[in-house]
Amino acid sequence: MLPCSVQGIEIMPVNSKKELKHFIEFPWSVYQDNSYWVPPLLSDRKSFFDPQKNPFYKHGEAQLFLAYHGNKPAGTIAAAINYTHNEIHQDKTGFFGFFECINNYDVAAALFNAASSWLKKKGMNIMRGPMNFTIHDPCGLLINGFDLSPTLMMPYNHQYYVDFFDRFGFYKASDLFSYRTDKVSKNLSKACENSLEEEPGIRLIKASRSYFMKVMSGFKNVYNESMVNNWGYIPFTDEEFYYTTRNLKPVIDPDLTCVAEYNGKVAGYVLALPDYNVILRKLNGRIFPWLPFVFLLNRKKMETVRVIALAVKEEFRGTLLTALLYLQPIATALNKGYNNVEASWIHEDNTKMIKALERMEFKKCCTYRIYDYSIP
Image: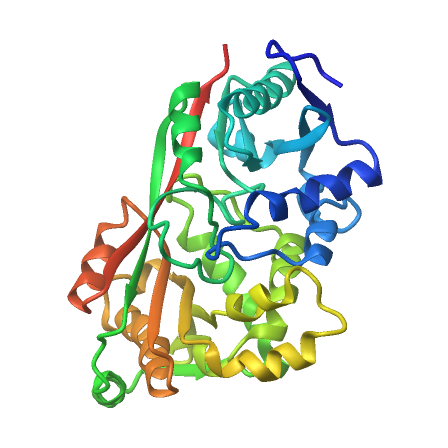
């Protein structure tokens, strides 16, 4: 155990399977009375923290910590270093994530100190987060929108966490937004069809399950190319992208994932997914033996589609092709009976996308803040 200045609080590095089990299962106790939180799959968490399975560990390292208060688990945090990020951005930034804590600031401060001390020993001077572990994973602290259930792969946290971050001395690095609508016109699909007829060089191709991995391989290349100037950019490696998309394949709706071609050449991609959080909430972290029954009973209760990613080659940005690529899954979702569409996340600097969403009557519903802390 690591000593703490507050009596009764101890911080333990996670080094054993038993400790990892406690780390993974701790959030259930924190959110047991919260109806908005969505339990992650235990099997996914175990895989994520396994250096033999998660390709993050090929260019990064991490240390998990457990807090104990009165000999009971009271909080978790992970400190991580992404050497690819530091090489690209020429800085010494470390990251933290998987922060969960009982409503006790002293416990939170002890966890923050443990993470920052570990990063300092590794030569870092900034601690940034929450990120689990990279900007491609769920990231950001929810600072408003606590009365909304998160959509698939979006974070959720207690409101008192915001006070903990402010009191400790974190400051804003960047904000991420999510936008939702239930008012997009049903005529949108027809408008897309008419626009395609007027611009015959544009072709939108749906990604069938059998070709999903091939389609997503092309998505990676366009994504890395199109995001190079974005805040916090790091490229997906082949292994990371395969690890991510392999987990998405079982839940795709082929009608909601599109490839855009212009005169036969790939110009962009859009990825949207039904909000399977409705089912994950029922599973409570465990896939078997209930998955088939839970899915059948609840699949019609999925009312929301999340547009997760849009990647367009530089020469097509701001053109009709970009608009159609974004509009197509939205129109399709509403025509298939989904009631809501969420676009998330959108970086605060992406003013073109924000204005486009507002023109389509999307409303900002949640803000997720990424913080920095100057390590003393």
